[in-house]
Image 1 (cartoon, rainbow, N blue to C red):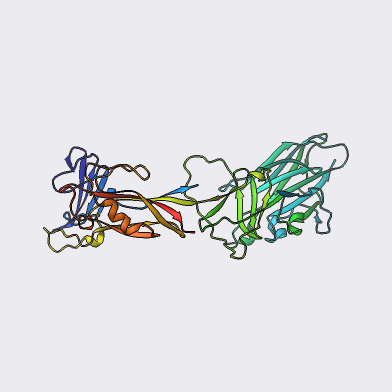
Image 2: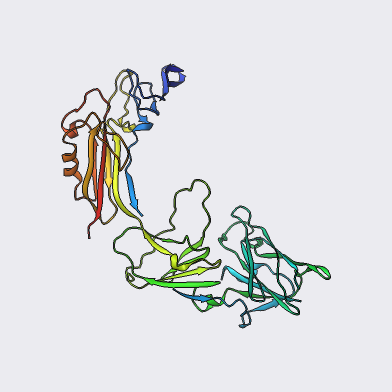
Length: 422
């Protein structure tokens, strides 16, 4: 139902004496009975007491401050670990989770188009030891086809396919029937027309020479040394200059990477966990396994350092704990609104750059005083928070001594600077 200009109400009833209402306000005004901040929704489970308002959700806001190589020999397959088969074999039956990589190699004798079907996940093609191209599927469709003109020489030619399977589940129905790796292989435009190489004799080799040499390296491995920075802030590697591969820190794998150009809105980052070795803080070794090229000299170690923390919350913040129906005509506030400020571990609040209880405006890093302001706001916040890692503040008139502007909905806005304690 419409209750006024740019306001509305939805009332629900399950029978005699029961009622729940949702009030919404799309303007900057409020009516005589309920204070509705602009662009907000209030919930009244009994049509009398407000237990939630979408504009009065207070939360802290944090502001952050943000080699030597080994190349895989793509022709060195005669090291004793290769074997042959008269046709293409399922990749998982050979690798058995010992490596992401499997070499397929065969020979043929001039300038045709090579077509390779694969069931995932990526493929690098080498002709006579020279890189001829790559192809890969997607997360939703791992199947793909590599098709490209290749430069063959007169006489015998070697075709090597480095098939890569990543992110495979280790459980599930009919896991033994999962199929990844190379399927049909053909050469087209030869003098004799299309030639099917699928049933030709192929040589297989699991993994890469760099893996067996404990260099944790596929096509190209880079490694460098660095000292761990001071502090306890979260660290990350910026791999924007690289393509696809894996990373190790001090011999501990921290996962694979496959960079892509962002398209649309990016979601939140999800960390796989913390790797911390208290015995290793200097000369840490970074190993990077890179398949597609890239520039390892531009890999950087980035630290997320909390510089400023802010809170912005209204007084009389509705909470379900405040809602206690004793009579149809009585409202009670059982608990005053409280907010928390917290710096990162190993940091304390070294300065309070803004504090106002009243009608401040703006957002974190650009708060401004409003027409209503409790003069002791700064002194109260400094006493409660300065020099501490965390503090808890009440958003109420009594907390700041008096009501700076009666009959006006007030809020508390605070910004603090976090500094390292060491």
